[in-house]
Length: 103
Image (tube, rainbow, N blue to C red; front, side, top):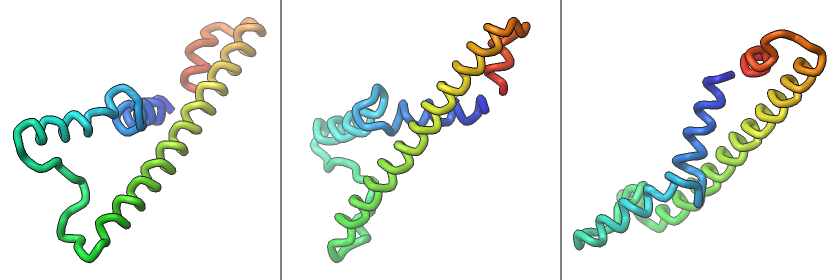
């Protein structure tokens, strides 16, 4: 459970559009342009025949879908953990926070 939360946080921090560290790609592009070189691209030029645009589109769709899935899982995990803690705390169970985090 904790591994899922950490993986989701890592993914959202680095891949979510407009989120904190997700701007790193733009930083790499700006550095390359400032040095006078071409901007780096994750799609190899070997795709050729106009396939690079299709690969970019598919990559964006996959990224958006996976990010949405992981965001949903994170939200559900936070809601379930919070509700579990509240119910356990109200019923007087000792170590309610620990149980809510690991359950």
